[in-house]
Image (cartoon, rainbow, N blue to C red):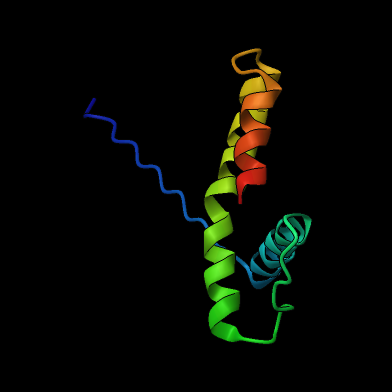
Length: 85
């Protein structure tokens, strides 16, 4: 028998709905901080910047929620990072 090769490919897509949801997430946090963010659709550049700025917080929340369920990390540590953005 010959050598068995294995190949794995993971392709991630960021859909417009997810990017738009990120805008609403950040605007919510900014309003809670007392700021008045521009509404989604008012500026394409601002929308893009805000959507990208939220991505690390969204990733951290998804990543650490799984860790919390395993008992690896207390809930307070991940929620503080989420509300920072």
